[in-house]
Structure formats: C-alpha cells, structure tokens
Image 1 (spheres, rainbow, N blue to C red):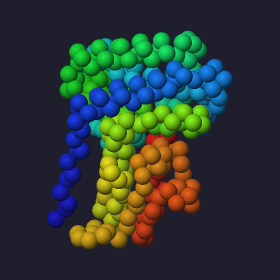
Image 2 (cartoon, helix red, strand yellow):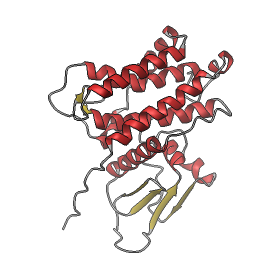
Image 3 (cartoon, helix red, strand yellow):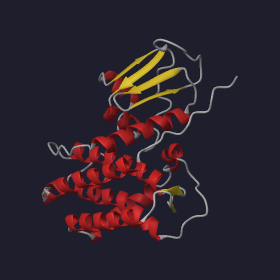
Length: 265
C-alpha cells in the first residue's frame, strides 16, 4: 500500500502577519541607526552594498501591496512548497530593481515608513484567501505572507553578517514559519521516509527515498539549528562547511544532504 499523502502544513494567518510586521519593524529600527559609512559596506550578496540590501528588504513587503492592487488571477498557480524552486532565474531582474530602488530613495527610513503604511493598509482591507498575481505564480495572500517570512528572515541574517554587532533580532513567529517552509520544501524535493531532518524547536520532516522506519530512532538523522538550516537552504552556507564547523549533526548512509541543497539562491 502506498504511503498516505501528507497534508500541507497549516499556518496561523494572524501569527504570520504579526511575524512579518515584527520582523520588518526590527530591520527598520536597525537600518535607521546605520551610518553612511556602514551603508556603503559590502555584503555577501555579490556586489550589493548594505544600502542596497536594506532597500531590497522593503521590496519583500511592498510586493504584497503591489500585487494586491493588480487584477485577481482566476486560479492559484503555486503551492507554498513549490515557491522556493519557483524563485530561481529571477536574480538579474531582482538585482536591477534593487539598485534602482536604492538610488531613488536615499532616505531609507522614509522608504520603510511608506512601505509599512501601505502594507498595513493592504492587510486591513484584503482577505487572506485573495489571490495575488505574484511573478513566481499566483498564490493566496495568506500563503504569500509565509514566503515573506523567508525573505525577511534571510535578509535580516544577511544584514547581521554585513554589519558586525548589528544583531537585528529574529521574531520567533517569522523564524518558525521560515524554517518550516524550507524544511517542507526539502521534503517535497526529495520525497521519502529514509531520512529525518530535525530543526528544533520548529520543524521535523522526513525525506529521501529508501527504507522507512516505523519506530524508535530512524537510521538516518540530520539535526541543526534554525539559522544554520536557513543558511544551508538558501546557499549562504555549504553542507561541507556546516559539517566541518560542527553546525550539523548527521548520521546514517542517507544523511548527506549536499546534493539537495541549496533549495533557493
């Protein structure tokens, strides 16, 4: 008998919205305190400066408002777990838009203020079931907001890496949603039950074809913390480096995930 089809993970819309707003607020507060010198520093994202990275963060939220203003698509085109793979191939377009945005908005706090005001207005007047015409594919607003936690959490980590001591906090709800979505995307990419991937305290998924365990400790286990997992899934950290630095515990013949990562870049 084939294994039962797994139900998609459910996300609490209220918690997701709160997480997105909280994380955006954390970044806005941190960016407000950056000096012109710090804004000119490089980042780990190609040749983007901190200023361009900070401007890009607003794009992750503004796209919600902009897509809500467009005509509603006839049907959904993308599920949550399909979203990470659908982001591939847009890097050049995103980079060009980011540069223009940063150049046209020297006052970053004013940009953040406008973006947040529009976002709050959009959330107040748009039902969660409303389909958005996102470039990656039409999605319901509630689902699309989960993808925004990935954008915000990942780029918060990029900012912290670029500016030593900045230490922008990660909202727990945003971090949880980001971790779970990327874990589920791995399970969708490599379906199976031979390997258990644990990212406490937020996610446990089974993946990879092979013998399925039924009780006790599975023969193949991968365990890491949320930020390490997010860095692996987004290409900020390689599997080899994570293993050599002791950031991932992996046991079993099918516990090597190097061929499956990153999930998006």
